[in-house]
Image 1 (cartoon, chains in turn purple, green):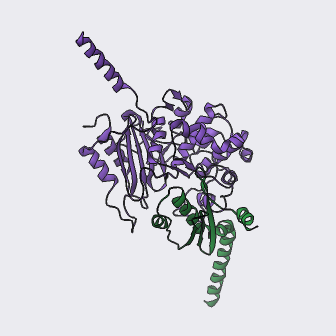
Image 2 (cartoon, rainbow over the protein chains, first blue to last red; image 1 turned 30 degrees about the horizontal axis):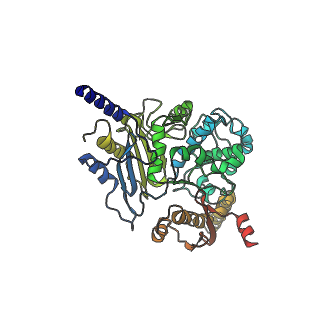
Length: 362
Length: 110
């Protein structure tokens, strides 16, 4: 009889080990300090020079393995409680907001934007799925560091477009047939935001919180808007690293949070499917549905060769990144203030994988 | 020789004029960039990310100079660069900061 109860206890504990961990309400934390973890830490946080602002300048690094925080570090003025600007990683979060709206029957991937948003009647063929692939075909100029004068994105955020960013983007002429040509565009993201505002009306202002942030237990979010009231989906979400990791865990687990399937399966699949068409440069990022992928449509080199093929990411200016490696059970958040190129995401992912992946030595 | 020089000058001036005309929309908007960027990003740095003042002044520094005026009580930031002044104001926990438009400024003057 004692042997039987021992067996029962063993069975229970192994079941508990197999159970999924979730940050509800707080993240479970089990920090490690292996040699591999130190190598990861050393790469992300070299000596920091705030005067010259050169080199790799990480503000935060957070690694979550199977729902448990295993690595957490901050630098400079950034702390665990800092809602850090994530810049263009906001775009991927907005795709999740739209997926929630689709789950509630408010819109569909194949809907033309014009069905919900009048200014897009100038471009009646452009569908939500095209815009999520950054393939609206509109003649948009994203470059700003080298061509600030003609940059559409600078004009949208800071000058001519700032009052109504959706309308500003919709005023761009059609250059390619919709859905045929990838052209990275912050205007595309803000067209989606303006469309959601029109679709939801008065419910719009609280929608990302009601639909996405609150179910995930995210409390630190700020999402700035333009003067027309639309969310600036392209650029202006602020979150703590711990809260951004919640989005990563949601995506790692295929849009499911606990028992609830928050994002429809077809949307999750679409977000992680590489766009097939013109304009994708080998060696550049592989666009999915407003997420960046490590899976290429043809036999091309992967953007992050040392990370698994199922890796995907939300990426932003000056080094912001939310990386998800489902086959390794890993979510990596990196906040930064990189003012020059030099940071290598492939290296970071390789080191994170070595320290905390399925094959890692404890 | 002198005549050729004159013609070349005239041609250059003409080409410049055409260029300026073609790019007039972009050129007219351009001087506002520095003031807008500085006001908006400083406002968010201070009142959304809640970073220290020194850090935020460094954070918004660009290759062109700008002056900055912060009213912490109103959480309103104004910045001037290339002779153009722009303002941003903090609106709330969820909304963060927003650049003011022409209409906003007229409304607040009234």
